Length: 408
Image 1 (cartoon, rainbow, N blue to C red):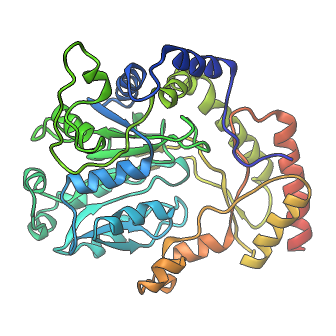
Image 2: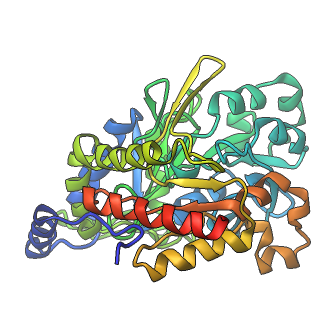
Image 3: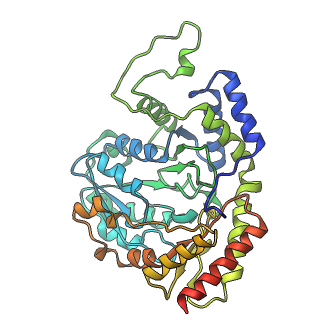
């Protein structure tokens, strides 16, 4: 069976975990702190905090900004539930908007129409590894008419003076706009290092802080360290210094810290990311694109494009193929028949407003026709860094055989 997205694991990673276990330091410690510094250098930002998930990072940044009941956060209809769930956790209302069908990312024009005096945050999602249009979003939030709509209700909101851009960059680590890495485009960006992601720490995530000169990003990092460790003003590493056991609880915080076991995996993967892990994924996507480019009825994924002099470059996280002439039932039949021939595939995603929880809140996919259409026709083919040429060929041979069988 060719799996959909197994994690890349090599002997160096196994040895790194073993070394961490032998060190006796398995919670947040020196490797986590080193991982944060190396992530910050890679993304071109001053501060990064590593956490146990991207979900925790999204929620903690909403809470840091003071998002609460009565507020609105604009999110794309086409994303995973975590993007919207964290808004609900804060008591605020997710405002879904439709997408650009070619990029799968939320349409800036739809975003501008959705802004109200209750809007506190715009949360773009970098679908499949392709960065959202951050230059366009910055232009929107900095418009004087939009800034006049903004009603700050917390100290951080008053300091920023406008809607915050919080990037859900779970798919886009290593992607870029104008050769500038994701992480350095939004006010803050949240990465996922889950098992299926390009760079994995088994479970984990990180927040890249890139606020303007009105903020001290180091101070924000220190605040987040407290907020993500039960509100405790010293972590285990600090308390291990001689005579430094005393601590205080300064807020009712959360438990979201990354461990050195996870960070040891990330450090090895980060070292190989640009030279091996991402190029391998690109090779898979290029092979698929070349095999499929002449096939009728398919819309190939966008991995790079230029708009308004801005060049967008993907991280090759997914290969989201659109079957332009297929019904949802035909798409599902293709997935089933491929599985019977030992090739896994997937659908990204069931749009959030289509799920039971959000339907019961009153959302309807009738309001997001482009997201609905993409969902009905999308199929994600396997992409992973250790994929062999034989496996790539088998995926294409099986897909094309099944596609022509179902569609003809």
